[in-house]
Image (cartoon, rainbow over all chains, first blue to last red; front, top):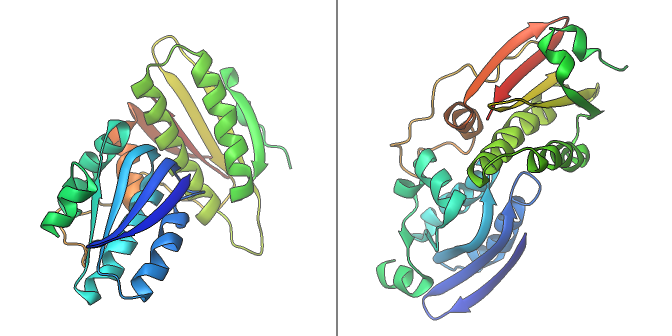
Length: 110
Length: 146
């Protein structure tokens, strides 16, 4: 999985490309932790080019969402597609983590 | 110690097997072994991701929980491309454990209340066309189909 993060005016966008599985899921938390420690409140995970997610990937997203809460922050996602969208629906994560078309739309609501 | 999975049942004789140490370093090779076969079998895109996801959930569970850290052992993975489904069997010699048993996670809980674990079993039950657990000859044997 390739992962990159960009600081924007209203928060941080973390872009995930490839596969978020038992091997790679921890990369997401590793990418977010420094931002959270630095006081960032809102993170948007852009999943438009994520091809695969397992329960380990969902767990990594949930961990970050939990870490943001004490700061009054939120994790949102954007760009759900394909099997990732289906796994979000099956696991109830579509109700748990707010989803948007793109990062701009997410930051308007967070 | 090599396992003898084929004697467990007549059906298991048709499986193709790979046995590896039950650790994360082996996981990628085990997944490749099964997915390479699935890609040449006539599976749809949807069947392929369902297979990959259920396989990961089942095998990672064995790797993480089947053996105590001081006594690691192996996991065996077998596949059989059948006429109307793709069958996978996963075997370990850890303590008896049924990975399919247990309550579903409560999907209505909030972020603060929701636990990080427990989803793998739920997704396995949701996505496999069938899944069954047996304890055979001192082994945990999980068989599922996609």
